[in-house]
Image (cartoon, rainbow, N blue to C red; front, side, top):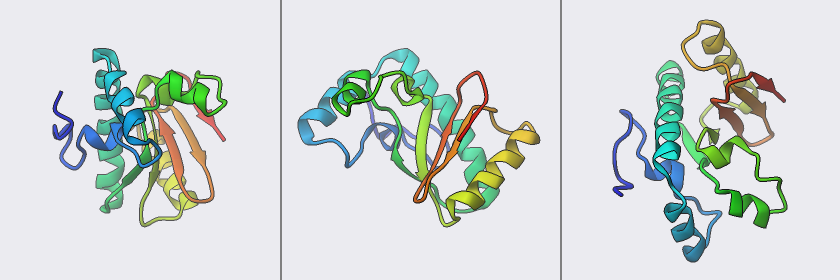
Length: 136
């Protein structure tokens, strides 16, 4: 698997799979957890994030995207996060999370990106491509 594969104009597969949150052993387990369906979900997520990036005309950094179920359980979480499906990313950019949230809502309203999950936190914004809209 080529983690340097360019999946959109500005995003590589590695950005959705590699994270400073993992140690070396965990990172290899994350890579080994990828399935064709998860990679397809990451592709769709990347296309939506590319639309957001194009709209704000600024780079988007991914804090973390794909998180396997085993990692979620290790962190004391349920394992039902959209991250486990490759459908979610916690992102940062030059905009404040509250400002980025507004851009995302506008793009959803304009039907330019999927109406999935959107959550604003103090230091990042969560966006996912789940089937049912969710807000927090």
